[in-house]
Length: 276
Image (cartoon, rainbow, N blue to C red; front, side, top):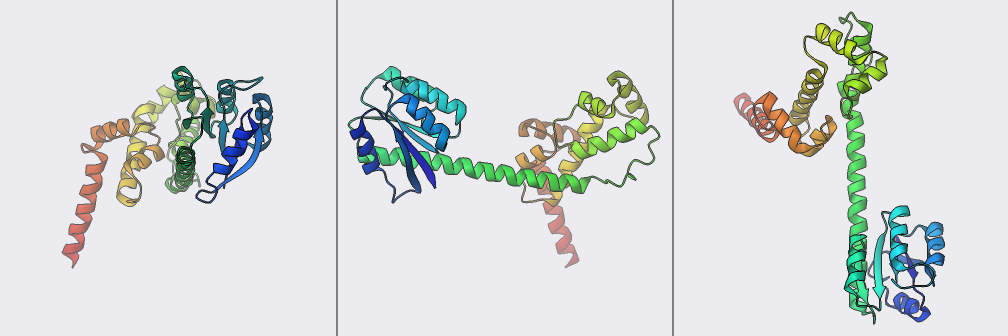
């Protein structure tokens, strides 16, 4: 259910909006109305609505100033402007502030319904993206846990305690934006000294090791997790830019992530036919 607040200094306009609201077509509920900007701010603080319908010119606090406050305190709310002023400058400013729609008085029912439909669609898309992000984050944690051995035996051959601790940290957090500095802070060691002993112990530098680890885990996911997109895998393995991930992967593996996945799938199919 999407909660709606109406802010307009003309009572008859507020009542008209309430009358024209498509409450049967969409999951919306009007939870409050205010007659000026300051009262509107208090209403927003109290109810934190999903949709705000407001005039531009009102006593005490203009609609444009109100929009700026909404974008600061309720950035996820959808805002619909209803104005009696066919002013391009007002409309331009409102659009720059990110309003959902700009409607002119006298208000037409069809236009209001279109604006509400757009606002509800935007909210639904945002909720869907949030759910997808939350699901991906949960998958990240689960898959990362699968990659890491927490019994301490994985790096038992490493002689230096600091390097061993650093390696455990790197393997547990490679999906995050970790750096040489963050690892050194974690193990409490000077970065220049750490770089020297890390390369001596591991045979390659820190950045090279981290990149190799991420590519190795990305290849594993490309083989084993067909439901994950290339972008998902980039994110899971610590690459914030899927395009950069693809370039790095191709440099290391000599094919793109998509080509690698297709080759592995084709190989599995051929093996299955051979067995039959």
